Image 1 (cartoon, one colour):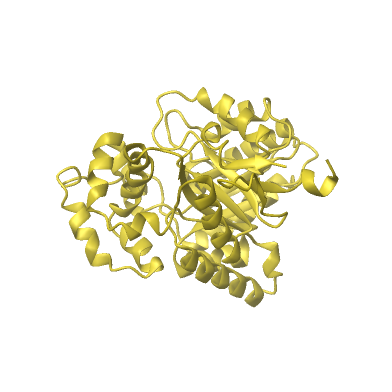
Image 2: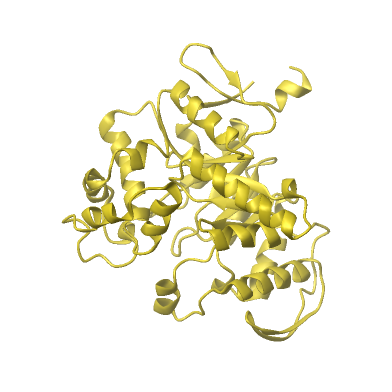
Length: 362
């Protein structure tokens, strides 16, 4: 096997064996997607992700069983090459020194394979848990504080991100600060990513056209800030369900879509980015399984209940913004996202141990 082929990620087609996507498009996947009562399956999923040759293993942090610091440490010890990414955590959920300490400890354990994805979340969540809301100014300053701490600098700060008279990590490994990737949907978030972050994590259920518009916005912001647009890595999240029977496909994809579209203001933003009519969300939210639900539906509804509610969504809102069907059909969708400007696809919904028929290394 030559060196070039050993670095090519390929997607198996229905009859052509394997079609190389080439070096430009990386592939990642989520471990432990959605609600999980047990974090231990992440270990086997990480091993399989590395065996498949994926570039990055992502964790959507959720308090209870999906703490990024704990899992990053564990996953770093059963893998050797794959990057391990928070997708996502938040600046205000940990003290700046705690987040930087977590990141650099994980860097040391993993030999520099950590990626920190940062999100804004919704104001209602921060009010509910008694933590400050995110602002553009606090996000920008928090990113700077994080990087300085990871470099071993002493930080004295008072401003939008808080008041810290004297911060420093006493000991750090000989590793660079992990890349910071910002999760964004709307124009303000995309501009933040282009100006101040090392990458952008685009939301699930964006169409290829929406990804293209997002890429253009990020690159324009980077150029306006005097940065090389190509230095900002574009991660496009794509929900994948291949080779499943219709009932299981509806559960994997439809239920996941409901968790995003039903959240007030968030669903409207997602629909707007895709060029869809947000008025159609009223039908979804009036569904008996969702009526009266406040916050994220997947925290109070079962997978079967979410799947039932998904029947209220237009078919285009699912099938036009996900990779479904045979491996070949998934490959076609991957190509569309690549052509839209994605540097790496983050495969969601299906865990790495379910992706073998779709993703292979030459």
